Amino acid sequence: MDETNDLSGARVLITGGTGYVGSHVAVALAGAGAEVELLDNLCHSSANVVERVSDLAGVDVTLHRVDLRRQEDVPGVFDGAPFDAVVHCAGLKSVAESISHPLDYYDNNVVGTLNLLRAMDRAGTRRLVFSSSATVYSPEGVPPLDESAPIGPINPYGRTKSVVEEILDEVCAADPSWGVYNLRYFNPVGAHPSGRIGEDPNTDPANLVPRVLDVALGVRSEIAVYGTDYDTPDGTCIRDYIHVCDLADGHVAAVARLLDTATGCRAVNLGTGTGHSVLEVVEAVRRVSGREVPTRPHQRRPGDQPVSVADASMAETELGWTARRGLEEMCGDAWNWRHHNPRGFEDG
Ligand code: WQD
Picture (cartoon, rainbow, N blue to C red):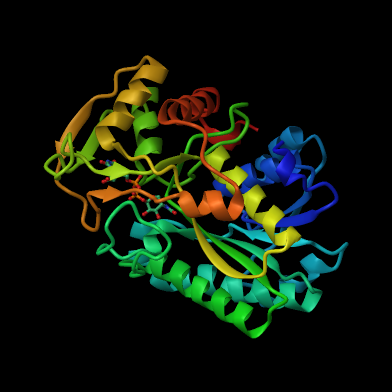
């Protein structure tokens, strides 16, 4: 536990708390001394996560099985002891799915957030850490992207994140008792080193690292490399992959600042500032798994940017946080999780 982030005595609700990022945030907050409760509708995650999070937290963690889209169900979550802050991770997060089902994304990600904010305001809980995304940035931005880079999402998923950021900005402007951090994630990967929690997409993963791990496990025959002719050193796209435990630590730091003095609404990038190419990720998984990972050049994926890397300096000055784990550790922990949980959380 980072001494500067002692959350002893704080009560924090994590929405999307049985999801990939939410479960890691819950463990990190508990590790900093906070009392955590989870909210999730379990549409994309397993109830088995609660037991694993409780094991890692060393305390029984409560799950509120609630769908934030059901406005009438949300206020009751706040009927118990007051929460000091909410970390809002609940939301749909597939770019491709958002293009084919935009209404689902606005309903879950925007309407769900409005219902949460109303219930928070009614309960007097006005400290919020929001799970935003680097997809709010315009493709015109020149990497490394800082928080002043132009905003211009190009898909419904990114637009829902940008709309919620604007809503939060206006709520804070109207009522100075609110304090908000919009944390803009770059590419979260990896898993808790215990191997007890990790990314468990119960739908076919679109992201690179889960697919490369599928190949290493023999679940998938090869990885199609979407574009090998980009203007990058090895011709493949570069991304700012960040260990999910570093990401979680960034949330702990944000909650600590909100409970200390921070008010108003601030956007902060959570990235490492270092980019890695598709082929570098594949090579790292080969090293940590000892497995062959065949690749096949494939045409570019529409909408992909050649390079997406964060300028992460604001997080250091604003939150006193920097990412500490490198690509080898990200892929090693991800492999450890998948290798020991081939069927994800369905293993109980
Ligand atoms: C990374 C690179 C692909 C699969 C997305 C969302 C973002 C965030 C993270 C939610 C790209 C290449 C991929 C494959 C490949 N999600 N690739 N073969 O697109 O940077 O970001 O996930 O917050 O919001 O936009 O991540 O992992 O999908 O792709 O070559 O089979 O890997 O082209 O260059 P992306 P990704």
